[in-house]
Image (tube, rainbow, N blue to C red; front, side, top):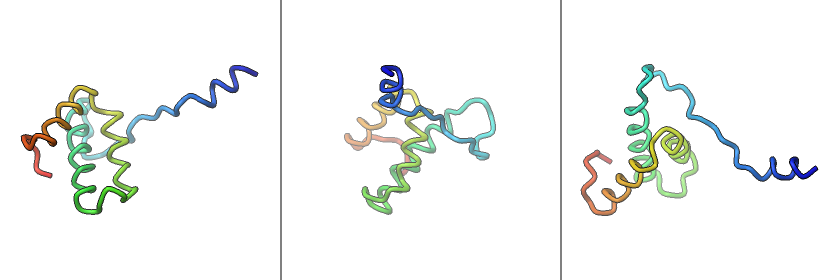
Length: 84
């Protein structure tokens, strides 16, 4: 009975779905594009627009945490190289 309680408390882990724009095994572009898409979506639709979270889910599962932290710092500092 204890394992049933613990299993239900664990977060559900999922990977990003296949995207035909990025068919190769190197998923770096998929990671970066999903990060851009998330921030573009929020910029256009607003922070409360729920469908934007799809892109967040993808980049958090695809991108190394260190990259995301670096990009977030760059966005805050105004030095992010991408076009959002």
